Image (cartoon, rainbow, N blue to C red; front, side, top):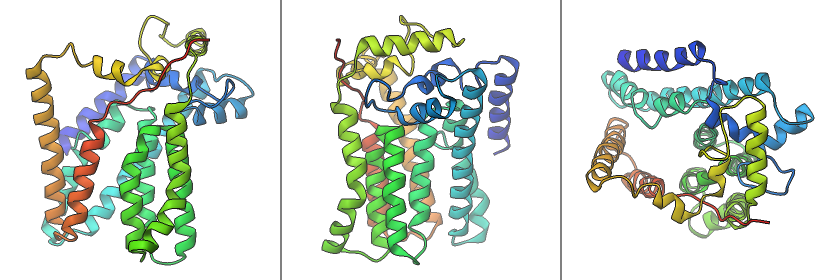
Length: 306
């Protein structure tokens, strides 16, 4: 944990020494994407920002927003870590569980390295859904909150929906629903997020509009242009493009990545399950397996020139 803290401090210090909108130009470019040309995936935050500012964001607004997005994810992960420690069966395992969570490449490390990226909103959405399922009072309000959080998270990062589905179903089950009752409640809870996910991949994107947004971000001072990949141009990727981005990697490199990251993910999940009482084995296996498989799926969207 000490080593992890030093690495995190080094990453954050680099943003002060070399100012690049806190999140970096690539991540910050996403803040220029909005709904002025119609619905577009990942456009919610940019649309809200443009409405509040009355136009495209400037350097100060982008930096403030990046810090907020970063802080939201960190707060969510701190809550998650504390909540997990409280479920540890043996008190002596508390520090060990904290180390597994804090030093994981999928928690704080991801948030710090990709600071300001919309993935942080997805992390916060997952944690909030989990938190809503822990109580038992006012079930109806908790369900409504789950539906709202799911929709807002998907509107910010559409790839979050498959991750949220599993947690929403387990959360509703924990709140007391089962079988047909669970299906009846889960359907309207997940429907808004599902429709937003479908729209995110079904709506045709204009290459001209994406290029215009890139130019606007460049004029604001970001180190982006039309010839380089950024968070704006990535919205025009197809699934084939996403798969093609890995073809330049050797089979050995891919195998090593799967072994290291996949092994770390599976091992940490198993350790946390064991340290927290080995309860509901089927639920633990479902979450670990489903989230692992979804993470392998390449994202993308079709491009339509007009």
